[in-house]
Image (cartoon, rainbow, N blue to C red; front, side):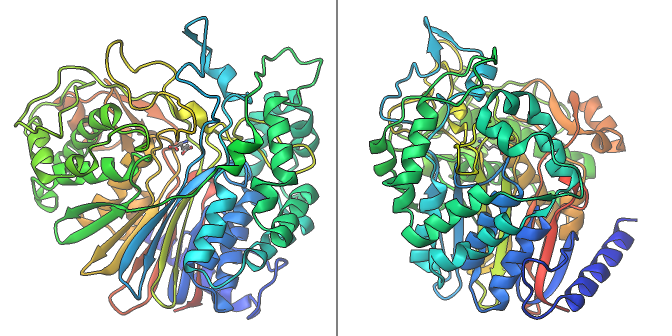
Length: 590
Ligand code: GLU
């Protein structure tokens, strides 16, 4: 059944592309299909308008970086509850000429005034829900500077050119789909309490209506004209600071909306470091990802190293899933104990990714009995077979809304870029007159140490970046790209990337099937989250016999991915159904 959907979908993609004029503009009807194959470059994102913008950039001769920035800016318009200039992200780039992967860290930073007690009041953590909708949780946005840095480093377009399609999209408007409508409806209560958010989004726009955001169009215009200085040292930044420190709460609202303590200097000091990617050697593949402050790269990498101790291709479907869950559990215990902002904590990154450490952890996996989590971390600096440190390391809560885009161009360059404002709708606070939501990324910090007496590398600190789970990933074989992908989903991002990778690379599923497959996510807790279709499989029943316990959840992640075919074509893949289905596009189908 899945296959026939794919055939229909690909035919629809082809038809859509044939109907599209050579130079499609923002009025071109958009197509929402999960797979596209062909030449000249591909784009996959959660949104048809954004993917179209990316393909237009590629078609006009832009490279993958140009397209990625244009797509991210467009997502700031059509998916403003996950993306936008008010947030941050991680940009992973494969340079085809140099056969080299590099990354940009556009993670938000805590203000200089933030201490370890950022979320404490009278030594007690404030209620999480109150931190979510607050100025307190807003980090210095990294996204505008990430775009500028990526373009400076590898792009051919100026920021002015790259933001033009998104400005047009915001000004002319786009058609509201069910996802956009739902996201507003889910946030309606808190948006109603913030005057600027209420004015922009409420009442929830009807499905099929046109949504325009002239304030955001003007913000993009200002960035195009004056550069990112308008944000980090200029009028947009001043508005951000004022909004964080005096959230525009309706005086009649009873909600507690705490102010932050952000300064112009916090914005002025913001930098986007270029970081070495995380690297794990998996079979004959090189898996590159995002190093700390994201835990994405080290945790996916460690789990792969653990899984490499058996040949997953030869395992039964149940044993494959059992090992996937156990490797996830163990690597999450280590992530929780060891990963934080490397500027503040000595993260043993190389040791976490060593095969010796993975072997010492794999030894805890039994083929006949599930570990009952949470398990204790190991010590990667001193790996001993089956040894643990004895302290449990559970995974704190993280939001589940973000968005990932994947692009490849005709020269073979690839970008995997995950952008976020943390929770769906971020802090819920729109900067008045600017048309974008501020992030609440600082809630990714631990509010208190994970367990009493246990060192926690992820407590807040001045200028510190909260630990992330975002895992934009590019896999190479002999220096050539094989597959690139990423997902939203907070901490589930890691298990989603791991599941899709192993299903594609080890279990031989076509990429679309690997993305569509029902998901489960074990993050070092007693129960494993799993989607309903997963729970109905015979493997789930067999896993229960091994001792796994499951909790149902509606949806895990929203992957976008691209892969290189042996004949040089590219395949782009998006979700067939999750989040209403994504949009894969190719420049020249065929
Ligand atoms: N803030 C999360 C992180 O950085 C991402 C949130 C999400 O995926 O929804 O890991």
